[in-house]
Image: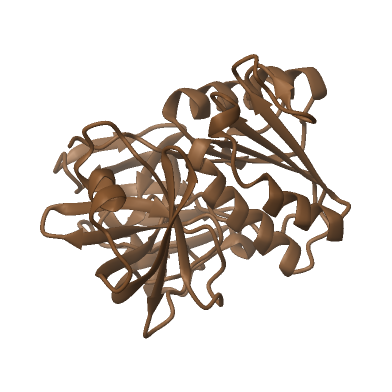
Length: 328
């Protein structure tokens, strides 16, 4: 049986039962991967024809047909098929690892957002926009996005406090400078695509600003000249944060445009009132050829994704990281 890989046009002989990611790696096919456990979504690819088996949580579940997406690390080849992978110039490979880190600061950014800074003996290699699993103690683990860049002296995370939340309550009331934290990552597929040269739409809701800051910082630092339009949404004026960091970047990089959007009627000077999706719809009747990074609550991400597709952004050029709430 054969595996055809688009857009490369490669055809590989494969044996039934072979793991898709292992086949791609053994033939030096450029493919992104990270956690190797089907959680992070980095090795996602599209099944254009034929069928495969998903060996993840639903063991043996047949998948196939046009526009079926699978995680290569969890996929077993059961017959000849054609798959589509990310463009070769978009590949990022960071094998997930676990590091020991120490808390250097816990700061209040708003009434319910804490900025946690960590220092580790070894650097964490990641792409802007990815996240890591932070473990503060037994049973105290949650995923949070990096707000900085890999070469920063410290890792930075923004934690929103959830009422009754076990982990966020620990961060707010117990976590102290000097405490040990385990950092596992990187994870996630909503990372910066550095080879793209067109306009970028970056939409952040709440602490979704953390990965968006990382993406913007990474794009600007690497010399990307893309027009970048950031829409930062908040529920009310007291939930707004981080605009000073974006303003500093904007002063040095005129291709960056920042729009702060507050849902409540108490928006401050220079801020818009309403939903981020309303602001985007007002500003951009068409978004053909753009790429979008969407980070924040699931309802916001879903609404922004729908709007982006309606305005002309191809689904494969939407990179979303929805912050689903964890059970206490």
